[in-house]
Image (cartoon, rainbow, N blue to C red; front, side, top):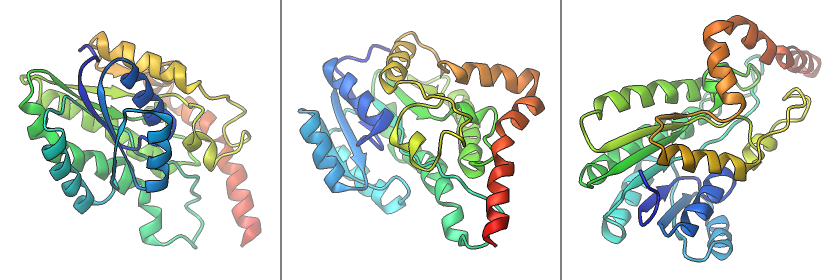
Length: 263
């Protein structure tokens, strides 16, 4: 699928991968609409990327998704590509009893329920196009979990499975289903709740490089795009799954010790 002269909707487009993807797709002559919860961030994104369209919307809120669909259907009915990019990643210690039941599942609502609802809501628009695509952003952690980010890792594993099922169900339609599984990438999400020690001193991939891989992969017709370490994690999840999980889980012991001291 050539990414030129398309109408593209990107959730979570005010920073990180979503914003860089929007920037590059605008340069290629596409009409790009980004969403985000924070209007101030949307205004800044519009200033930084002349030509981008912005709509305030919360990917975790079913009512907001319905409202977004109504606005898109009126203003941009020829939707060609839906990019489910909005997400959060948090460090969670399951032994921390101070977290509420609502708080502990926030990542599920945003990272998993959000994309599932977006697909359900926007699929009729995509099916009406002569060629269309759904791009689900998962993670290399879909294949091997990072123990200190258990809910995030679980949502991305679920997104990998969901994308596979979605691809099979839509196999006889003109809607391609593409999974983009980034490795650790230098974005606010990657750096926000985590220290270098938490991540084993690993430096994230430059977001511009990641987006180059994403666009090239989509245009080559790849259904799973796994740049850098993500490809290693996919391979390792099949060959040495327990070993890799333990390697990524080493920082969980330090987190547990800190929790024990606090209590």
